[in-house]
Amino acid sequence: MKKTAVIAIAAALAVSTTLFAAPKKAKKTKQGKVFNIYCWNEEFQSRFKDFFEASGKVPADVKVNWIITPNQGNAYQNKLDEALLQQENASADDKVDLFLVEADYALKYVDTPYTLDVKKDIGLTDADLANQYKYTKDIMTDSKKVLKGVSWQACPGGFIYRRSFAKEVLGTDDPAQVQEKLSDWDKFDAVAAQMKARGYFMLSGFDDDFRVFSDNVTSPWVTGSKINVDQSIKRWVAQTKTYTDKGYNNKANLWSAESGNGAKKNGKVFGYFGPGWFIDFSLAGWTKDDPDGPNAVGNGSYGDWAFCKGPEGFSWGGTWICGAAGSDNIQLIRDIMYTLTCDKTTMTAISEKTGDFTNNEAAMQEVASGSYQNAFLGGQNHLALLLDSAKSIDKSNMSAYDQGMAEKLQAAMADYYNGKVTEDAAWNNFYTSVLELYPNLTK
Image 1 (cartoon, rainbow, N blue to C red):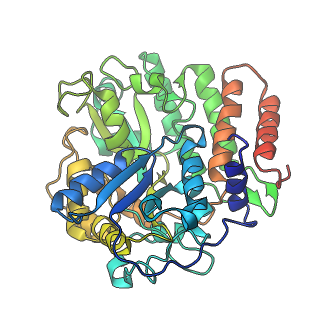
Image 2: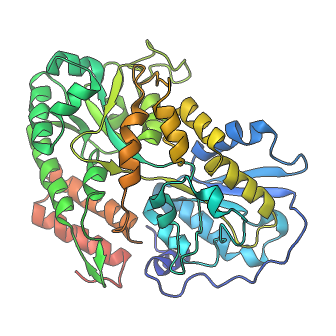
Image 3: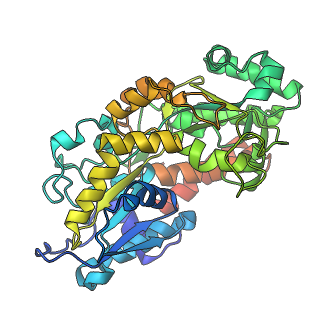
């Protein structure tokens, strides 16, 4: 992260020192004519347009203004923080109305006066929220037990694998049978060796299974002010070094072109770990030879994939919708939050159209037991495999440091995996970079 004034404020947010200056309570006003939404990509925009705007729910005299800033280099948070700092004095048309946050840094915004109370300020009720998965509400509940944001998705994950490679190497592409061969890490390692022997990579690169290990930690990144490295994180480091040295991965970094290319028709990567949003919003697109062509078998490796749980259950990510204090569009915020995160019919439609695992237990049970088929996954109804995982997700070990720690660790260890530095040097580099980012911490 760059050391700007905004980042200094962001760091203060993360360590629970003085946060944003508290804005004055907004007076009740007429509905605003410009509705500003801050986000980092087009995922929420597509959900909004397809399942809210298309239903005629945006008032005719309101202009929806999208302020989309990519996440890279912390640019999105910088832009959002600058806007929130100016919120009290901004003109009505320039005020933030709605903004999105990810799991890795959600806590940064939860305990601030810049996020509205979903119930008291916005008007959703306990009955409205009853079917949402508990962990999605826990993440956005502040120290005073106030809910500050809601999500349309829950993010239990699994292993998405190439069917044709499974048939060739394992003799089957059936998800239940493949799961038997991948049900623990020892079995997973054994299959990795088999894949290597046939010229395939078990994983694309260094970070592909990081979220599986990081989501199964038994302690947070920071205890008091001391940096804590959980044993599960250390297991990821050891496994990834082994996979790199033995050629079980393609030495790619997550989100790189190399990582995506491994999924194409001529790619050699057996599988990727991810939740529903990763399948729909990332992997499916990577597999297509013609990016603008149909989502259909024959366009690259599209359709040559299947889904199983893998060695450990986990969750990854999630996007939450927050109402911004000072907005003059509270009713529209409520309508968006209700439609996209509470309404069972909408949640079912999102899931059936996109493959996303939505944040409504009743909707997911209906889709999982119905006739839904995911074309990308060869007609599989993978959502049924995620029901139990979604109910058991536990985020009690989350901290406001998760994003920074993960990014610095992955960067430091990449040099170790590539043989540029020793493991001790990589750890020293990790601590140096983290202490620069969070000077309040100790090694």
